[in-house]
Image (cartoon, rainbow, N blue to C red; front, side, top):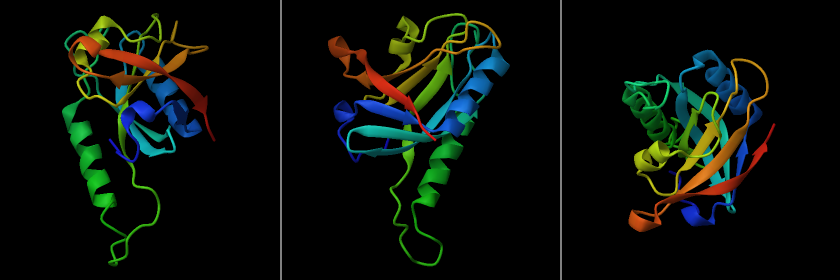
Length: 167
């Protein structure tokens, strides 16, 4: 994650329009199975900006009820972000904010856009965003909610984030 702000200070997520469309398309294409992927962006002034959503294969044994992001995709995204942060290839530092993995997205087909017990059990990284799409069917409106993973042990929980769809 991009550690420019303490994770608990993140109160909102702006999801880029392209990222939103990519998540919606992936959730509908995988219905009735859960889709999943990686959210990439920056954190500034208490707001996470997810400008990219990178779909990944769901490699869980029971894709209708669980998700597990293909580790090859996760590794590829991490490597690309590391390489992108080195400069412009001509020895000059890039001045734009450094992108990082903000968190993950997945779907709850015909379910609710709230973290499940399985989501809580599987979310080990404190401070990451969890974005959940809950398509009631393969087409049509899609409830979408964002959550921030907080704490370990007895404090394990998710806190809702304000979600805005950007341009």
